Length: 383
Image (cartoon, rainbow, N blue to C red; front, side, top):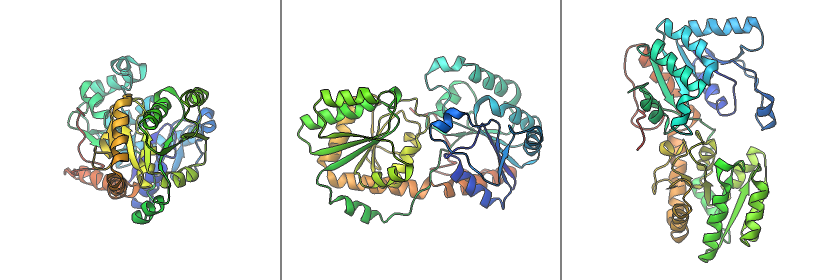
């Protein structure tokens, strides 16, 4: 089976899955970059990748022509990345060839996003050109199906998917035992310090925990436009001994730090399309406490089973979730174990690639192959 993945440019979210698909297809997998990576992304820490399967359509006319020929010829095309993918989808779907569109929720800011130029263009293409074609949606958010159904597209054609980070093989009991040497509960927050990531919620949580007499340590990793504001807030609340701003670290160091902490806080609002940092924390046997509107949360977490889910931007809801864990340390350990089990048995790049391959093979032979849970299970609007 030949598979092509078309997007604006390849990034670290897509490399693990792409590597697996290249292996599964016997090197008949291609990642088509429609756009050169902007310098702003490189400055933000994105890396350039050199893989034999990458086709740089933006580089010259020869590669662009090759990319369109691949779009015509491959058995399966997966496309994600806004307006850059539309010419490739048109080529495929006018020929009635199986195509999977891959994406986060388009209406992150709500109804107003329905009138954005990119969304209007993609909806016109769907309703006038692609409506009755073999076209399916891979939902890289628990809320993608909501936005699709709201716009009357991909009805009963939405499937769970995501971003897939590498999951290390852990001795879970040993990871948890090592944390028992901690003199206090250790909480970690890791993100850019920008408004929709809500770093202030972590500090306000620390204030409430401190006032309630809990012994804990909160370490915050990251930088951004709100860093000085957060530093002032920590000082105003007299939390300097409890809350520490650690700055930025390479990803491998962040993972080691996650493994040494009991709780991972994820405070973003609905603007967090997926949130790979949640995958990473679960892979380090951290107990996640995450906002309900983060894209990955409906797919990866079940409140009270493999983590705690609080109401987005609600400090009292966040406090009650963390308080529950601090009052019941054994439950906190069990949720951490279940978080790791979930990510390791359902959401690895290897599992996602194998499921995608089987799903596509079945579709090509006019069969249905749908999983009950995890990647390639049906996605429906989230209540």
